[in-house]
Length: 88
Image (cartoon, rainbow, N blue to C red; front, side, top):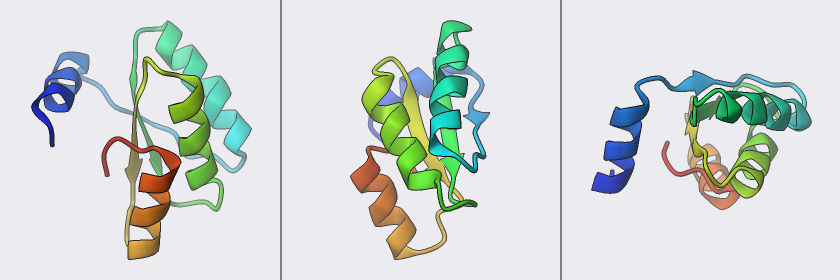
């Protein structure tokens, strides 16, 4: 993990986990979390909406640090990377 990302995560202290069935829900929750000062977010690959949720968060919330969780396959890893996840 790059030092700057490691430093940011250390300063945030909390990583919010967003499990969503609809990708748009992640964006609404992510906006509220960011407004509350909780910029670290993880979207686990537990629903089909995960990759799209990561893409929306990464592209619409530049102040957020967006990660992917429950990455169990190479396809999950590639989808997370392609969607803009900063960590897996």
